[in-house]
Figure (cartoon, rainbow, N blue to C red):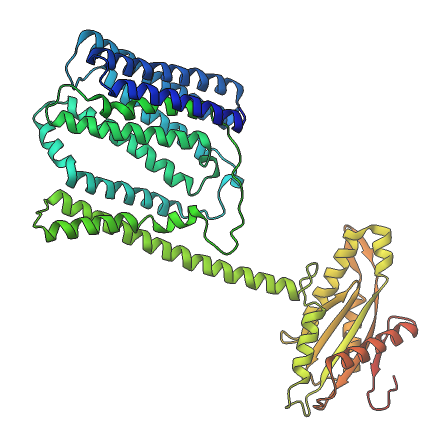
Length: 512
C-alpha cells in the first residue's frame, strides 16, 4: 500500500472510530447496547488486523514474514480473548474481574507482539543498525531506568493502594495489573530499540506502539477501578481498549519504507537527543515528585525508597558505561588518526615512507644548526629491469620485486635512517650521520639489490642505478629540493653510464 492511500484509509478509519466512541460514551444507548457495540467493534477490528497480517505474511519472506507471523499469533490471541470476554460479560453477565480464558488471551497479546518486535530488530544486516549505535548494555539500562521510573511514579500515585486491595481479593487482580504492565514493557522496548535499529523506525512499529500505549492506559484505569470495588466500567474508561485493535489494524496495513537520512549539519538528530536525555528526564521527575512529597509531609514506604535508589543506581551505572564507551571511542579516534597519518606518509605497497615523508625528514635534518661534521647522505635508486619483469610476468611479480627491494634496503640501513619509495620503481634512502663514505654506502646497497629475486619458482635478476649526494655543513640557503635535485641528477648520470653503477655528486666541483 502506498503512503498516500494509507493516509486516506487512516483518516477514514479514524473517523469511524471517533463516531463509535462518541456513540458509546454519549449515553444515548442503554448500558447493555453500549457494551455490546464497544466489544463487537473491538472484535471486528481485531479480526481485520488478523486477516491483513496473515495476508502480508504470506507475501513476505525472511524476517518480514517471521515478525508478521508472530503478530498473526498475537491477533489470534486477542480475537479469542475478546470472543470469550463478549460471551462472558455481555451474554452471561460474569462479574468483574474474571479469571477466565479471556484474561489469558489478553495477557498473551503483548508477549507475542514483543516476540515480533525482537525478531524484527535482531534479524537484520549491519546496514540496518543506525550510525549512532550504542553499547547494548547501556541501551538495556536506559530501558530499565524508564521502567523503574514509571514504577516509582505509579506506585506512589496509585499502585500501592491497588496492591493492598488485590492482596485480599484473589488471583483475578494479578492478571488485571499484569496486563497493562506487559503493554508498558512493549512500549518501552519499542522506544529503546528505535534508538539503534532502523527497522523499528517504521510505520507498523509506530502504530503498534500507539496501540500498546492506548491499551496500557485503559488497562491501568480498569485496574484502579477494580481495586476500588467497581463492578461496571464507565464507557469512557474503555476508550483505550477500543482504540487498540484499530491501531493494530492500521499497523497491519501500514507501508514499510526506509528511513530518510537527514544531514546532521552540526546538530544532534532527535533520536540522539532523546537517547542523551533518557536517564535524566525520569530521574528529574522522580526527584521533583519526592521533593514535593517531602515538603508536604508525605511519608514514603520501603518499596518507594528502594525503588528510587535502584533507579539512581541504574543511572550511575549507565553513566559509568557511557564514560567507558567515550574513552574507547577516543582511543579508536586516535588510532584512526594515526592510521590515516601513516597512510598519508607511507607507500601502500611496500610499507616504507613516501616522497612527502622523505622530503619532510630531509628538510628537518638540513634545518638543524648542529650539522657541522655530521654528513647527511641522500641516495636515489632506480630499479633497472623492473619494467621487463612487470611486462613479462605481470604486475603481481613486479609488486613482489618492489617489496623485496624495500625490504632489502630496510635491512641495510639503521632504524633511524629513512627508506622511501618515490614512485614507480624509484626509491630514496636518507642516512644521517653515518661515518662511511657515500660511495661505499651506494655500492653496498647496489650489491644487495643485485641479488636474484625468487618469485613462484622463477629467478628474476634486476639491477639498480644509484645517485648519491652528501651534505656536510649547515646552510640556510640550501633546501631539501636542492638536495633532492642533486641526488636525482646523479642517479640519471649513473643510468647514462650503463646502469648497475653508483654516481656520487660533488657539490663543490660539480664533477661526478
